[in-house]
Image (cartoon, rainbow, N blue to C red; front, side, top):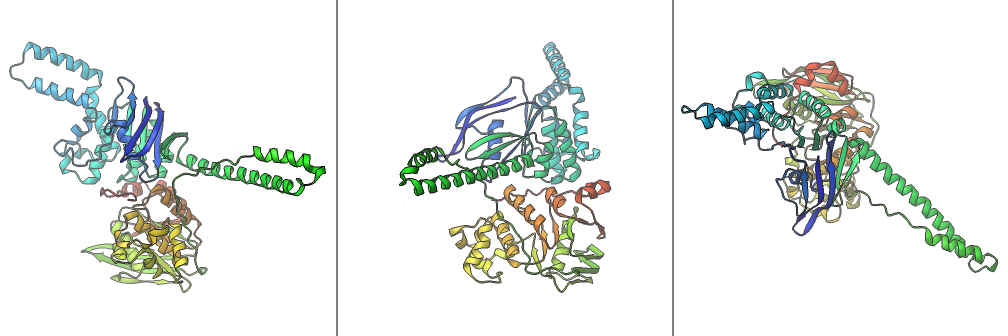
Length: 545
C-alpha cells in the first residue's frame, strides 16, 4: 500500500495541487487523469521519490518494492536486453553481479565463501534462479523475438526498446507499479497483452494515459486532478466521465427547480405583501424564500471543445469511385491497383502499420498528389475537407488566427469566424496570436476549426488526435460519431476507430488492399495477423503543448 498525506506541490508561488490525502491499495489499478498541465506525470514523480513535494509525505509499507516505467530509451544501451529487464529489480541484479564477481576470483577466501552462501540464500529467496526465464516470458508476451533477448540494447530499434523498458517495469512482481503512458508506441498485440497482465496483476498499479480504451479496460479507480485537488473515484474512465456529466446535469436540474420556486415565491410576495388579507401568507413565503439557496455548481476546470461538423448540403448516393490506383514512392510500390467505391453511409477507417501508404492515399484523394496510374472520381454532390498529418505548411506565415481561418470561411464576417474559433477554445485575445507561434495542439485545434467551417459532406482525417489532450480527443470522437456525412480517417485512438467506423480498410506492405464492412474490434478478432501488422513507430508523440 502507498499512502499520500497532506501532499502539496508549489511552483513559482502557485500550488499545482495541495492537501492531497490518498491511499492506493493492492489489487487496484488507478488511472490518473487531468487537463494538460494539471500535474499527472509530476504526481507520479512525487510518488516515486524522483521529485520532492513542498509539504506532506508519501509513505510505503515496509518491504514494498516500487517499480517505475523509465522514459530514457538510451539509458541502458551498454547492457544486454535480459540484464536490462532484470535491473528492474535492483537488489536481485546487484546480488547476481556480486555473486558472479566472487565466483570469478582466483583467490577465493573463506570470507568469500561465507558471503557467497549469504547471497545464494537471498538469491533463492527472491526466486533468482527463474529470473531469466521470467524476463524471457515478459519479452515474448510483448512480442520481442527470442533472438533479441541477448542483444545489446544499443542494437535494438526504438519500437523494441520501448517494450524492453516496459518489461523492466513489470519484472519481478513489484508491489507498486507506476506507469506513465505505457501504451505509447506499442503494437495492438502488445497493448492487448499488457491489458491482460494488468487486469490479472494483484498488486497496486498507478497509471497515466491518454488512451481511453486502455483506461477503461484496466482501471478499477480514477484519480482526477482538478482545482488543485486529487479525488479518487471508483470505476473506469467512462464511468467517471458519464457520472461527472450526469452529476452536473442533475445539479443544474435541481437548481432550475429551485429557481422556479424562488420566482414563484417572489411573485407571490410582490403581489400580496400590500394586501392585508394575504400579508400573513406573504410573510411565510418570504421566510421560505430566504431558506432556499442555490447549490453552487463547480464544473470541471477542464475545457471541452465543441466539435460539430455540419454539411452545407446533403450528400448523394454516388460519393467516390477509385479504379486501379497505383503509386510508387522512393522506388517502393506502396499503392498497388487499389479499387473501391464509397457510399453515402460509409465511415471508413484506414488502419494498419503502413502509414506512408495511408498518407499517400489521402494526398491523392485530396488532389495534392498524382497517382502513377489509375483514377478516382468524386460524386457531383460531394464537397471534401482534408486534415493532413503534417500541417506545418498551413502555419508558415504571419497571419493571425482570425485572419488564417477567415480565408477558408464562406462568410468573411469576423464574428462568424470567431464563433468557430471559440468552439475550439480560442477566446478573446487568442484570435490575434500569430499562427506560426502556435503549439502543436493549438495548430490541430485550428485545423479542426477549418474542417468545421468548411461545411463539407466528406471529411478526410490523417491522424487527427496527434498532439491533442484527452478532452479534445473526447470532443472529436463525439463530433465524428454525430457527423451525418462520409468519413475517411486514420487514427491510433482505438476508441475513435471502434465507435466511429463501419468499414475497415488496410493497405498491406505490398500495396494491396483489405476492405471489410465491419467494426474495428470485429476486424481484429477475425484476422489474427491484423493485430501483428499494427506496429507503431517509437518517435515520442507529444500531447497538446
